[in-house]
Length: 274
Image (tube, rainbow, N blue to C red; front, side, top):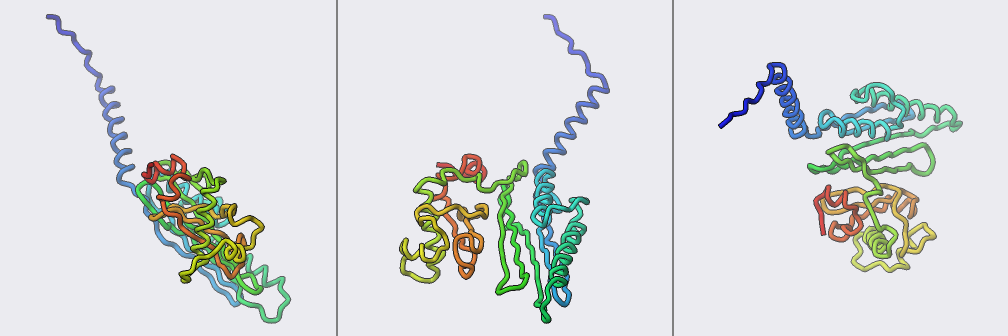
């Protein structure tokens, strides 16, 4: 019987193969051993007529695409004009904080009142929910620029950990159907019911809203939906659908009810299936 001889690999080839294997192992190890970690950082300043505050949950370590995308998201939520090192949170916060200070100072300069109220601008960008597949950030802004009351607003973004993809309203499907619109109506009824045990009628709900839409076909909030432990939360901005006194109408639709209206990408990510 003839025995075929297999050419021996050169030392250089063996070295290259070993190096490639080592890098691959390191990359796999980094993927598994580099969870997203964040640090809560704050910038604050006060003067006679103004108060500025920024608080962020800034990524300090984690998968490179995800961490960098969230850092860019934080910068964008604060204004999107910062051009220096995106990995330097102190520099970023100081840049935006000083810009907010200048904005408030300019307002006081052009106000002719003898007694100027304290103006304020407060921003928070927080990690509000996280699983091994995705992380949710919520951005809130509270300002008082004078007048009868201040304003508050916000938004939510969901990031897939594997590649940093950001999800907003596109996580939903079939939102123009009557069955989905019913979820919106029932959610708002729960919000306005508060502690009352009595159910709210369609007419009652209509009287609580500032909209020309029928309560059977209410629009989605501008605020992106947020994934959470129990379901998907929907939040309306002040004045978007109800008076300022109503706050930011918000409600959570449980996953067993919202499942038909989530895309396959989302149901796979949160491991929900029919």
